[in-house]
Length: 174
Length: 196
Image 1 (cartoon, chains in turn orange, green):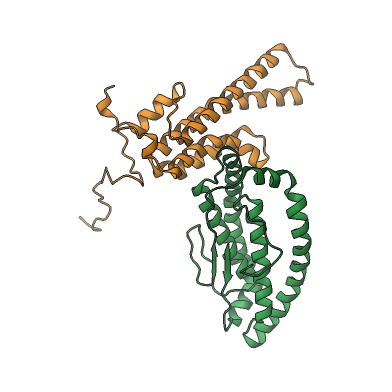
Image 2: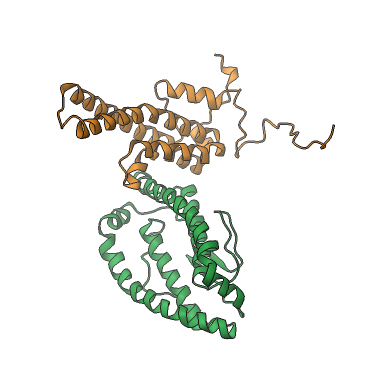
């Protein structure tokens, strides 16, 4: 991958306060379940998806952080769903008999959530300062998607870079 | 904050009747259906803004704008439900209205200390005292609404004092909501007047 294929990264002084705040907000979507008082793992993911679609066109910096935040939620959400289903199975079908595997998975889930929480807070604080933080796997993918030259999305804070010739109307009979 | 609902010289009797009989179907249900979802998103953003204030001391501007637009939408609907304005309230966050307006100044900074104070003790020093007065204002407002309804039906005029009172109650509620929603650090005055 050569550097020419990517759009130049903005430096903190190039970004507006609003862009930085919106980028930070993407990571704070992990608190959405708390806000709705519904402890369902899917709430955070839905909130992140909604936030992504509302904000992605505002600017590349915001788009990058929204995408990275959304993608980084996926594994934690899956782990939490797994935990929820397992716990419900024990509660309803296994007569509260808990084996060691469950405790191991519980520990794993807590650790995964803790790591996710710490990294998200760190990323939120850095985004607020206009600094990039790349998560493992997701960071480079999000960078490639957003800052890659192949990205055809038109951003509100950039000049129209990819004006497509719109051919919508045509006569009824040809 | 500046909340106004324009007092009309004449009110439409037919619209009043239409609203009274079918308003629940063509105003309340469609608007409330959408406002529920917008409100859920608004409460999520409000919580995120709370965390953001604690971290940075600022209410994120785009979230603030969303809340203001949502409040404007609610005001448009409220003023029709209470027969304070004629016409149909516009849908959407960017909807405009010729009779209602709500302007809220964006605060550059929000005090973290006050935010924590609100979070833990807001119920005691905001909700309880203001809620106590607002409860009686709302009760009196219901009586005034009935009186105004009859007045509009027979004379096409909304009693101006009743209009002022009802708009004042709305203004008061909005001020409390703004303060409790961390959108301002100014403690809501115990007054319904526009300029305090």
